[in-house]
Image 1 (cartoon, rainbow, N blue to C red):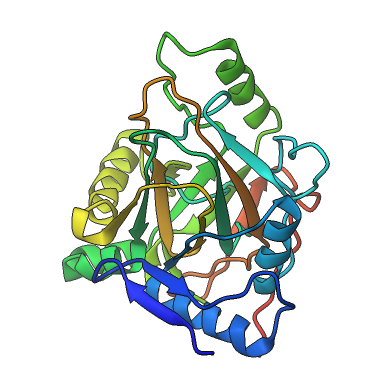
Image 2: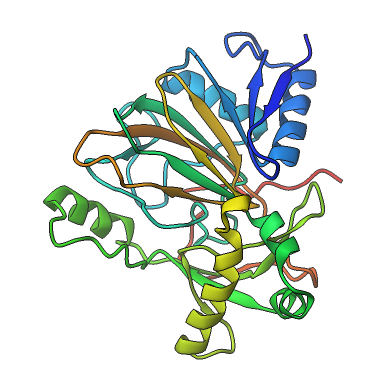
Length: 298
């Protein structure tokens, strides 16, 4: 049966129906899902019956899995599942997953485990639409820039942060990583150009700290324009898959102290390349224990 795809906004997001996640994978279904992901950047599935093993199996349809995280341990009994848990972390900052390594994940999957009575949405932004929105002079400048991304990121925890939050932050940055990426990344499958920045981007190569902050602020403002974003409200038994190469996301901390948990599984990615074809470089750290390099078929 063909998939049923319902757009959620004009620029990003779609609900997909008609996938039997209990069945063995087949090339036609995987190709259709990849096409949907290429077009909509984020796809959502309702009423899915998946456990951790099932989520890892489905994520594996898109390629080889990464481990849970370069520094943070996996969920007990797994190798590839990261708990995105309000008890230890609240990532209320715009970011693309793990851009401090030379080949960040190509695809991220999130499965709802514990949802909140209110709030707790995930925002996802289309960075290709953001790039297309840039005025031409700014687009030309962005094409030429490279940025250094680091896991030594200040999440600016409030003074009321718990000891578990502080310990998570310590583990997250315990082994430092830095990678230099093009500010404009060319998607290896679609050829689209997207702004490849987000919270882990610390500075622009060749510019001072103040100049870097100003440039990143201006470029980021195009990513987070409301028309480029999807605001997804979580319910039980949902699966969200997004293209980590051409999106950013933000977990909204608007649910007081209620528990919230999603399980994340990510798929190994390729080394980004800019408009000039120059690839990213690892500057600090070595992440082969975390991810292999996905290579696009010729």
